[in-house]
Image (cartoon, rainbow, N blue to C red):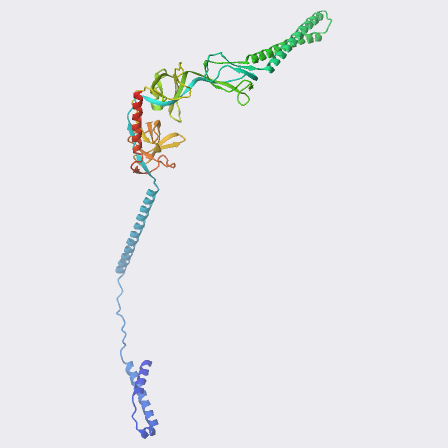
Length: 466
């Protein structure tokens, strides 16, 4: 309403007022009074008119309230929609978590590369390395102290049992022996005097000329003199035996392999740091060869069976030998049977300490395969390989190693050509562990067994040629 009044007043103020020059000035006050009244009346009319005008803002139509059943259905529909939306969101989160857990589990499973062992042809002959050893070997020490006078045989000399090897000068022992013999003579004289006194006091005791105590004292002195003579005899025999050790003799027939003394050297009795080794002597006919036969071939090793030895420095020559004895037990660490082979060496062509090969005629069909050398695990139970089972779980198997070809190994038992063998297995690999499997890269673990097989064939050809 105030706005309408202001607009009305503004309109009235803007209307022109006609007036003449002097007349206007004469009637100025009366004309202005009339105009103000008119303005007020007009304003009052306009306010009255505005009261009777209808309002321009209309109220929204009233909606009748919904029925209770319809309201319940609307609420249930909204809740169902919200539940479906929440369930879908929850299902999406659960599916995502499962996929994430599955991917995490897959990522934690190690991936290993595998190869299949390659089969080899069965051998009719088993060739094993071995070192030739003397049948008997003994260091020779002095049993008496003194100075070396002379030696009679140098290294390489073939001597017989009981042959003189050296002489030792023992001046101190000689003097001790002389002293012991003199002490024995004193003991003999004391014994004779004690015997005479004992007999004399026994006769006096019969006539009660002396007391029994005095007679017993003389008898005890006689017995003590007998014991002193026995001790003197033992000491003399001991020194006489030491005198016998002044000459050093060969304990058995063989060859001298060492001579550690020269004339004038001080010889001290005993062994080790206190003593001084004079000679080393070996019996070289026959020679012994110790070799370890793999467990797979152990049933074919018979004591007394004939075999032969070959040496690289004597190509094409075979030296007959005989299986002398076995350990009769499989070594738990190497899974091998320790076997001794004796080789006759009457002409001395074979040298003790030489490296050779023993050829066993096993005539067996032992299944053999080759695996890369980088597939073997070195652990406390022994040599093992990791094999992936049908369920992609690791199996640790003990293996029986035959030949070592450098880049590959000959396996006589433990794996077959159908097994999946892990190459470059990590140290943390354990039995029963789940792994992912992938084939070995080309050239890794595949060519090595082939090379090993060719090497084996070449060795078999060389053995057959011999």
